[in-house]
Length: 127
Image 1 (cartoon, rainbow, N blue to C red):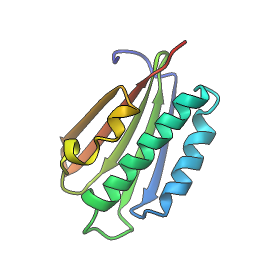
Image 2: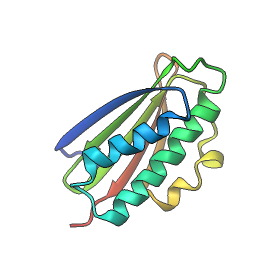
Image 3: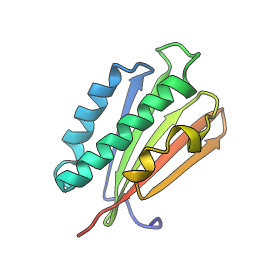
Image 4: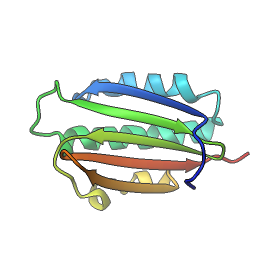
């Protein structure tokens, strides 16, 4: 699914607050609805909501709300990639995010330098 050029890329930074979910879902719908069929949009919103909620509750549970969570959305010709960046301790991906697997085609969780984690979700786009 990788090794393609990004057609569109979007980025949003929010506080570590569950209340930010409404802003995230509105932002996501606004930037991507013209590129996805309604069913795919719903599936991606569900996955994004579940992933963000788990990031706030588990990865950022002991951090102040001022600590940002970064969301990236990248549109490729045949798939959509959604990334959630956090700086908390890594959490048990398989145990916490099993609901997402029904909505997403590829799920990856990586730990990078400076205690950063990135949840990468990819959804195939059917032409």
